[in-house]
Amino acid sequence: MTRTIRAEFIKLATTRMWWGMLLGLVALVALNVVPSALFAGQNFGAGIPASPGLDEVAGLTAVYGAGYQSGYLVMLVLGAIIGAADLRHRTATQTFLATPSRGRVIVAKMVVALVAGLLYGAVSQVTTVLVAWPVVLARGAELRLGDSEVLRSLLLAIPGIALWGVIGVALGVLLRNQIAAILVSILYVFVGDPLIAGGLSLADVDGAVPYTPNNVSAAVVGAFTGFDLLTWWAGLLMLLAYGVLIALLGWAIGRRRDIA
Amino acid sequence: MSSTPAGVAGRGDRRIEIEGLTKRFGSLVAVEDLSFTVEPGRVTGFLGPNGAGKTTTLRMLLGLVRPTAGRSTIGGKPYHELSQPLGVVGAGLENSSFHPGRSARNHLRWVAATHGIAATRVEEVLELVGLEKDAGRRVGGYSQGMRQRLGLATAMLDDPDVVILDEPANGLDPQGIAWLRSLVRNLAAEGRTVLISSHVLSEVQQSVDDVVVIARGRLVHKGSLTSLGGAAGVEVVASDPAALRAALIAAGLTLTDGPGDRLRVATADVAAVGDVAHAAGVALRYLAPAATDLEQTFFRLVAEGERRR
Image 1 (tube, rainbow over the protein chains, first blue to last red):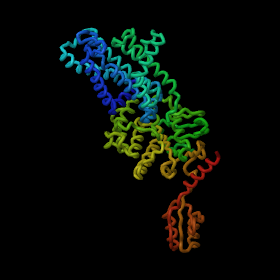
Image 2: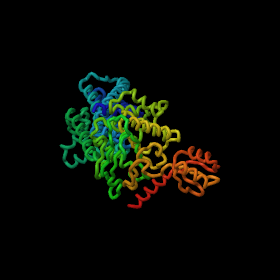
Image 3: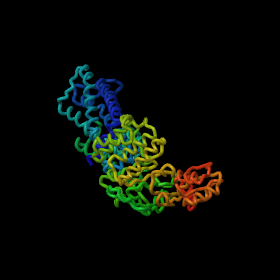
Image 4: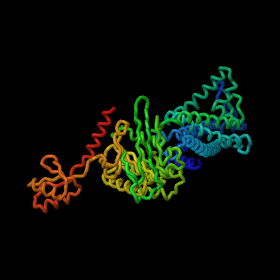
């Protein structure tokens, strides 16, 4: 198993895709965090209530969490690319010649996505702090990185982002088509999940609302969503459960498929 | 098929055995009730026109395609039961590829990692196939011939006892084909079991000992290369045909009528025929090896096989 994981890690590290995605991650996080820091607590009028200001912990965690969704979306897409890469580039033959167990290959890819996800998550959080820093200070507020609530939110985002990589691999394995897996990933996070949460709420099954993947992720960092959320550890477990369930489904459907 | 030549040390003596292998894709029968064995220490040509089911058969043997019926084993085990498969079987398959953005060396590195193969071995196989200078370049810029070489390097990575190559001559230049021929001969001489597929008999004719011919997914012939017929011959035209006939018969050679006014002599030895003519004082107008009729036999077998369905 460790050899298969090593092989999958080498695959990820030896094309330019991983650092292209990392650059994209840094750019997206910065594009979300900087405006959030600039406009936190400002009153735009027109009846729109002001968001919490930078003098409040809630305001700071909102700024630090502004890039979180971009972070996990990038990781979801990266995972999907990893999960479907062998079929896209016709390397599946070589992969399964070397490792005939398909389940073992899927698990190795999930482990690689998780480890890479921790790195991507860490980069995302370092980027967040570095770009928020000048804006927060310029607006005369403090970073308050030592505050336990701020720190916890910043750090928990790292596994929160990483676990979406596992979900991405599972999605890539299930859908088999890399482009389709990428499109489904983006559409789900931005459109599908909000629609499902809204629909559940309208249908008066509010108890299910905290279990949608976006809301589970929000629970991990304690973000404000307007819903009652799970605890952070239940959120992490739920993300893992989503990844494992989708992967099991992909494995069950694909394990008897011909590699041609 | 005949047994392993005496004197070849067994490298585990792994035989490929295919029994009643069948694959249907919906109503299409790709391979039907195919049985044959491939012996160690010999090169076996797996022949048939494009679409005959060669690649599907190899993919079933390698556990990539699930057979509808039948079984196949390598050294007595189905592929998925091999614990370190690349050390038993090295395969280069058609329609398998490399990530265009990854270098040849890095491709070999990840495959090596699956079996804990040392980095020095990666350099060895690069050298074996003559890719050491291009190994750092991304495969996307490789020619078809370079990809074939990389496929071969991948197959040889864990020094396998059984080597399976699917259309290995595709994309190789004539020098490359000659190089491949000697490599394949050496692999068999080392006692390995070698199976190479091709849709062109002449491409592998000089490297194979045995042949398995299929058409439309069914076996049409198996046996040694010579079992395809096409005994060696020399064609000759003399100014005095009657005198030459007498001289050749006196020398113990068998004669038949060749095309046109040519006389066909049942021997591979062109020089011997020339010497007999010279000793008899007969002037020759033409003397050359006869075109082999292996290819003709191959076409006839395939055509018969295709008519049967």
